[in-house]
Length: 571
Image (cartoon, rainbow, N blue to C red):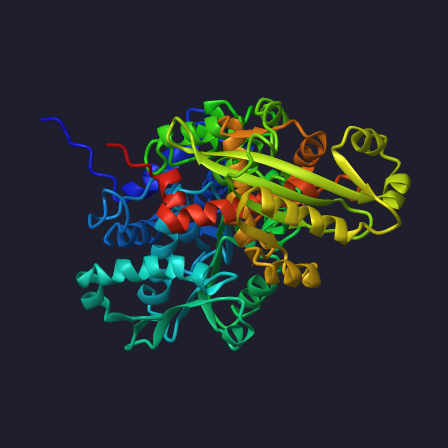
């Protein structure tokens, strides 16, 4: 009779151990920081089992936390409603956070944890169960758990995930006496609760943290939320502040500071036995456009992360500077400087049509925008003539006029200014301020020549001119120069250039401005166009983006422009 091998009493921990060993042996592709985290785990586990050092390793405690997580339901995707199945890298996190304890006790080793991983890899999938477990299962009276973020909406992302898990698990509610309402999950027997909090100062007063999950730490511009949570953990035996995030362009905030600190701990430059760190990204020498790099950065590749989707995103981003930074931060977890080139000048040059003139477009509908400057910057007006192309997609014919006062031309020492003026591309007005009367007269001429559907101004500019033009019946509208208004038309301009859906007359001033535009990206992937240096003017490009924003807004009101762009219907 052949003796059967008894089943591993802790299969989840065994999977975490196998994952760490595979990472160290390069059987699983991973960056140096993940390998160092795996090496740290294996070394600390070996030392603990040898009775060395202050830590013990309790696989049963880690396994219990994993078993709890897998009693909760999936809430998204095709597996929604089915029991959660932790991926190997998530088990690795659980094994570290719950397996290591102070020798001779069950007091957990790690009080802080930072996990950086690209978007879509399942940060919420492991963070929400951890929050529920530490708030309601460990039995510590009056436990307070928090889903924390800069904004209330961001904080609710993780809270709502935990709430849905509770709501869809009557077994959990009944077994542990847990209930939920709109803004709290609570356990009356122990007076414990899990709630969302944001950077609102009032909501951060008097916290007593058992567990806090700080979501998207890289989007925090200051350390306010993080510091308040950290200092609110002193009254608990073994609290946990878990930060989960993806890199952004905010390289000066607490998210980047904690990344740098975590890296120093992993590579051995800093000793911190109470910090667990796990950083998924690519190595410096990796080619960001190589699929091997994408696999390395995304531990859920082929599971939560769909390879075909990433391939499509990266392929498009490689050819579009406006999308490159967002793709690298979101899907490779690479910190990209906040200001990155937005537009491909090669693509812009390819869109030139010398036959595109004012006369050729006379009588057509257009949207006009004006970016005004009195002294050293250019003043520009842009015209966008939207049309439906032969491919059924939005196409745009664009023209621009640019103005500058003669004092600025002389002081700028830009040799292109006199040449552009001589060729008729730049209108130079006398004196040391650009003549607003010239701009106003030209706008009236535009209104006589074309069917102007909107004339957009920044509401902070040229109040008298706006009032005069509106009094004469021109369709003057306000265009606030903020990210929410600029991001989508900026992205659409870049996409239209690459797809040859733009035609322009080769205006060199506009081309120069297009090439000078850089983008400031926020944590949500929104982009704000700006200039890198004062001498690199972008005024004509900004006027064009404003006019395009008006054109697309009008099209959206008439028939779902953005819906068509992102989800076209074919019959």
